[in-house]
Image (cartoon, rainbow, N blue to C red; front, side, top):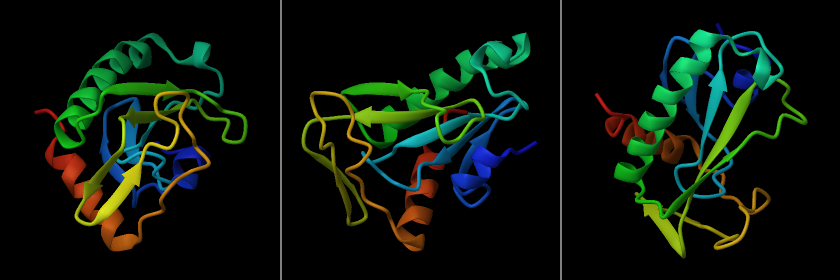
Length: 144
């Protein structure tokens, strides 16, 4: 199942992986290298509406996302932002944080907000080839 929020963030082209209740996709605007969207696939617009199975799987998804991003990017901190002001379906912006910048195959992304709050307005928008390479890199580091 997909929803409008997933499609807005480029689903299925930005797909890294999906679980039964959650999807992980590359955030098209890379405010830090490896920023992803963790979207609930259930038809809910409030976090409290996610059912017990979705909540249980969220723990597994978070553990796997953090392992993937640590192996692929080497973050120092990680931020989960549940903003849902424009895109109403339940989702998180998962932002790996680091001092300086990280690069992947020539794509360099600085963490403009470090060490303060993430700067979602300062981003790099990778072209199709760079995005595909980054998605493949993240998929290769998905646990299991």
